[in-house]
Length: 93
Image (tube, rainbow, N blue to C red; front, side):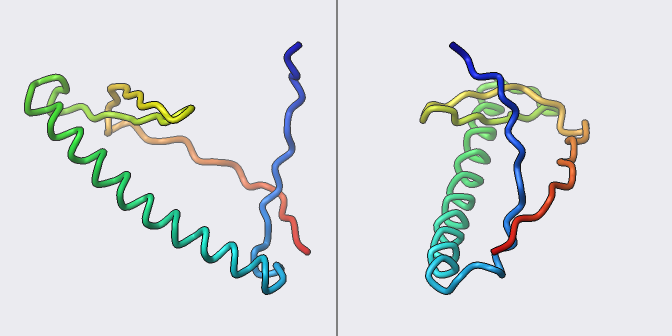
């Protein structure tokens, strides 16, 4: 049975974390920064390779999805604006 319960997300005030949690948060942020750089380099190289074989038009780009450890792409128009996330309530310790 599928649970259709909507989750109420709260933004955590990371300045309110204790020292142990803050150190773990900072370690996670370092790993995420390295992952972001590697992902951006991969995606740029993938888009360039796709354009080289004319799989993607010059005025189009690709969006990438990584669900469940796989790789999926979709053609997108980079001129179209992305939607902005709404402001969420804060969570503090």
